[in-house]
Each structure stands twice: as structure tokens, then as C-alpha cells.
Length: 267
Picture 1 (cartoon, helix red, strand yellow):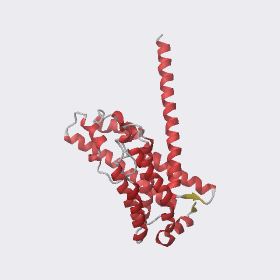
Picture 2 (picture 1 turned 90 degrees about the vertical axis):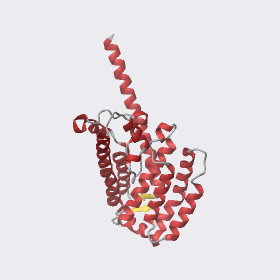
Picture 3 (picture 1 turned 180 degrees about the vertical axis):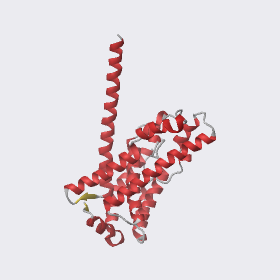
Picture 4 (picture 1 turned 120 degrees about the vertical axis):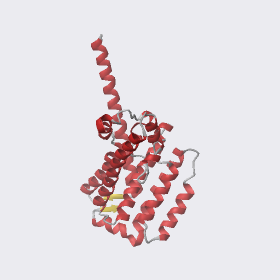
């Protein structure tokens, strides 16, 4: 009987793991489609197309969604000092979905889970430092990957495009969210819109007219819809319909010329 129960637990665990992998794979494909559509780019040949895919996957997976190794290491950090921390109802989104420039001590979901522990202020501060250092390394990876793939060696450009890729991922997560527990850990939608504008402003540096038109358009659609999910859908549509043309033409086609040198063209 014990053997049968163990087998049942094993098969249940296997089923849950496979289900998680299938969901992650599906979400990864959806994010990939969003990235290509929002930027409006493609590789000039199959090799460059694969390189673009690897860039997007590296950002969405290694820098945003993959938390398991970090979480396991975190629980063992400083002789198990942080072992009482749990993800709670938030799952993997409690980490790294909070925005590129966030002060993690103000991230609602993370603070709630930290406050559920019996830690003193010294332990809380130490925990936040470890998490912040990990996030800083991941942000650097986002910018480095963007710079090397697109050939964007000016900081405002690789931080602008890298930030747009990151923000597109978070926007996609809003669209997929079906419950507050999956949307609560995400960067607040108003702050996400603000960051999108900042990233586009970076890309448009020196072309105020292009940025001004984009900002007016985004402000027109940002409150369409009665829920965060509906608003996110409209914002995503706006980005896909307007951002590629802006990126292609901004500053007398500067980005288009840079991309072309690196084997990337607009659709």
C-alpha cells in the first residue's frame, strides 16, 4: 500500500512538473511573438533570426522568469538566515517582475512576504541587499544582451530598447493574469506606462517631435478598459501598431541604420 501511495505521489508530482513546463513554454512563445511585434524587427537571415530569438529568450527567461536556482541559494544564504521566507501565493513573479528601476523595499508583494517572517530589521536589510544585488546583475545582463545583439553601443539606446523588451514582458504578464495573486507582484500598471515612456524618450533622444506624438497616443489609450488586463491589452495593441514605425524613422532613421549593420531589419 505504501508503495502504491508513493507511486501516486510520484506520478502526481511528475504531472505537475510537466504541466508547469508546458505552461512556461506556451508563455515563452507568447512573449517571443510580442517582442518581435512590438519592436517590428526580424533577422536578415535565419542565423540572425535565431540570434534575435536567443536574445529575447535570454532576457525573458534568465533575467526575469527563472528564479529557482537563486531562490534555493537564497534559502541557504548566511547559514540559512533567510530560510523562513516563502513565495506565498505569488509564485515566481514575486521576484524580478517589479520594474527595472524599482526600490525593492517598496515592492508590495515582496515586502508582504518579508513582513510575515519574524526577522528583525537587520535580517530584513540583509535579505533586501542580497535580492537587490541579484537584480542588479540581471539588469546588467538585460542591457548587455541588448547591446551586443542589436549593436547599440550608446547607453540611451541599449537601455531604451532593453527596457522596452522588459516592459513588454511585464505587459504580457498582465494580459495573461487571471487573478490578483498573479498581477499583484507585477510593476504597477501606471508605473509601467511611465517606464515605457521613459524608454521611448531615451530612444528618441534629440527627436522631440517623434516622442511627443508617441506620448500623446499612449496617453489616449492607457485608460481604455475597465480592468488592468483590458488596459494592458489596449496598450499592447498601441505599441505593436505604433512603435515599429517610430523606431524605424526616429532621428533620420538612425536606429534602422544601426540595426541594418548588425543584420536586423524592420518588417
